[in-house]
Image 1 (cartoon, rainbow, N blue to C red):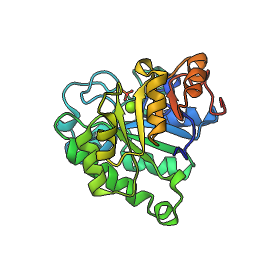
Image 2: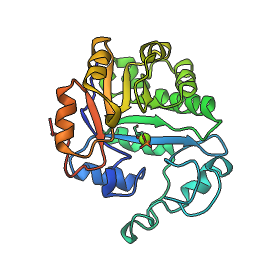
Image 3: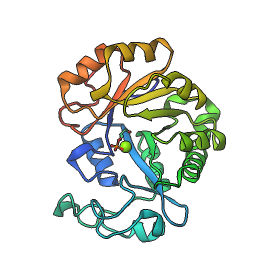
Image 4: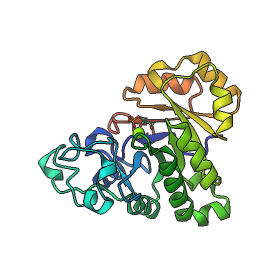
Length: 250
Ligand code: G3P
Ligand code: MG
């Protein structure tokens, strides 16, 4: 039901390094992490990059939509200076290179498909196909615990991912668990529900588990809360505080 690590570094290295960068992954690895969550979206040319925001300005200097800039242009931009001078010049990763790096270093991935608004189907399709190609060997061998888990708030993106690469598992990301959650999750052939721990109740957690789904929470930064959630049957979580909730937390 949840063959994956229980503690993931959110956005690569949590808040101890610039989010969604290889420097973040390396920071997480230094802390012992071999499992991460990160965000992927398409650039103008349809090539996926690792970014959280659909617009420039917060982690990458500039203005405008990611969908108006080609991937190699984005990859030449600085995604580290906003965090601190030590990370100046840290690039926006290309998804394929980033995922390859993680695979080569044994870092398991929860890939959040984060489409620029209006690009849901294309983003789900492209990201799922690339993940399937990169992990074709593990899929063929049935090593499900090594294959990335795709997740998204966009049901359209997940549907497209399922159609494009059904062998790569999906999780439905939802900020709270609605009454019709099970029907929607089953429509996506989702293996897990990913949800905001702040809105999760013990009763809802029990329902999700009783229905046979994995249950994952974002973004948990207090050890006492992490313990409580695991007590409710939560299978995994991601954290920004990789210093407070280490990979061997439980
Ligand atoms: O995948 C869980 C979490 O990352 C969702 O929220 O905004 O941090 O991508 P966000
Ligand atoms: Mg995310």
